[in-house]
Length: 439
Image (tube, rainbow, N blue to C red; front, side):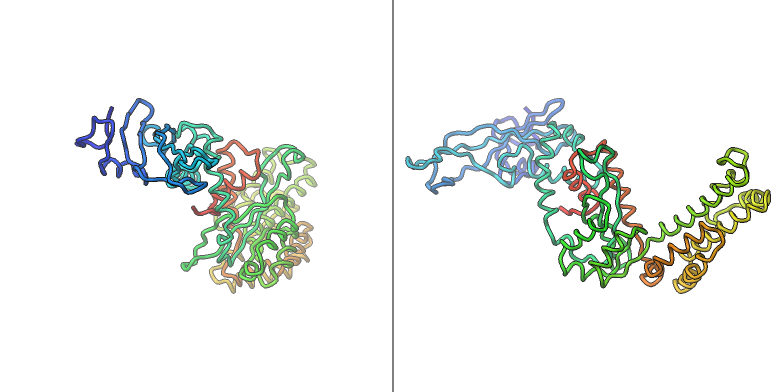
């Protein structure tokens, strides 16, 4: 037998009521009787102070019937920690009471039918949220099973997710979709989930993105239904709604967030410009050589250069670009498309938002008239999204970047768990990992 407190006079006794031992354990409502340390587990025997108890059914003062041992898993340290709770058993002294016997309950220690202490549940939730832990990993540390850990954690996550106060104070809202499984949708439901993210800036102008919810499907209807469920107060408070260029989400914003300003995400706009340059390069490659790009082909050798920003190119890269374009006069079409994409990119890089807006307005008015079909199509797209495209420059650079960051956290935790089969469990885990639930 070993005792956790050195120098304690009761270190070798079976019962130690000293306050130092109780403080070292840190569990309210119980005191330490003795401690036994093994190679792989620390066993701490505890009991509650002797107090009278009334029958839960009739209220009559009960008679003690001894104790029974109940094993509880606690927060691990260097080894697993096992709490042996000597739980009191009571007998109702009223002969007419149907309850007969009952056992004491300590909600501050453990739930009624739980086997993991309340503080171990809080520890597990903290590990899941901040340390990228998995349920399987926590089960190994606690010395129990996956189901036991999840059954202890899930009720707390459900309670936090049901708290509508977590939707308060949202003034900037982002939306995006991601794929959560890759099996047959007939067995697991829609592959895509739409995620809503709080992009509200703090008093210092910084965005602390947090996931608000995940709903099945990628459609305007899914987004609009979620907005409808939030209530008029929530919708009225949203001032900016950031989104990718997907018409379904834009329709939902126009329908449910009439007072909010829709902002097209800068990253995806620049991505459209880069994609247009790639399409022009591939088309010219086919027209001039009759095949896809191969090693040694001029345009194939500069494909990565065409995707970079002009200000980031080295002298060597600029020389390679010039050489590839001058090989054939037809390659000028690729160069013009690249310049258009650079102009689009430069609008977002202006320090003065007014200068950026002037460039963006010029793009909207000119790109659709370009003789290069891919750039003309890009121009028509930007004209359709004109208000959302230009809103970036009137909303202090509002964008969907925080939503993409949240998607990165989701991807990380899905890989750690080796995938999910239950969408409800997936939603709760991702809300916790991405800041949507605050214990």
